Length: 326
Image (spheres, rainbow, N blue to C red):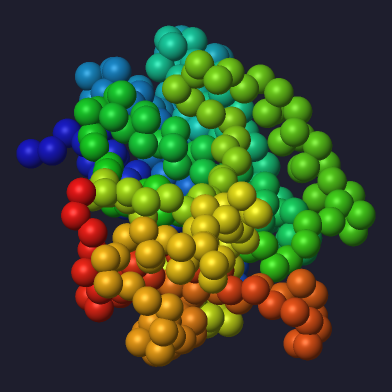
């Protein structure tokens, strides 16, 4: 039979997985708000599981006690369990339990600040609405840290490894670079939340295993690691957009046409810049995996252009030419 704390941990993980799955849906109109609501719910369940574990799984340790008067009007000596309108016991709030765990060093101030920021975002969503693209950026930074902290807490408190859920996929879905972030059009409520989160982030400590916010930086690099995220370039207008810096672009496409032919001469013993070479190369120009064409003026179709080739193109040439030995 499972303990109450273990059951709560499983519920907490299910809530966080649901939050991430919903957020990762590309056309879910209320995804940021839904993520904030479910992620807070996941954390509350996890914190209550920790509290139960620390109190020998006694469910009473989660209940709020209150003073009351006896039928004769005199105050009772013992406390009773406070109940809701339906008669169910009131449990301690997330805020109360977080502060208790902070006192016992189960959590750091950074983790507490992160959840305070996430809760502000949730409250702003539940009680009103958010219309500025800054909201999505704030959730990217705060939400990424909330997931990272959740994984850390699960491992630290219960020895639960969440790597099988691929939680690290979430940050890529946060990216939305085609919408400019502007603070000019913020309403008063959004500005207040933004300022509040900025103040909380000031307590960040690089040495802390918990984080207040996380900035997501996507870079392309070769990796043989089994857990490496697979990214494919696409011309699909509906694909998630990722912008490359000039440095990243040159790393991804290092060869000009002249550079390509020079590398081919150094790589193959039978290479010649002839019809065979052009017949192989030209069809590959249509595939972003192998080549990209950049114009000096992107908005002018008549502007001079230049071809840039990736390292991947040699995987095709290797099938048609003989590689030099050594």
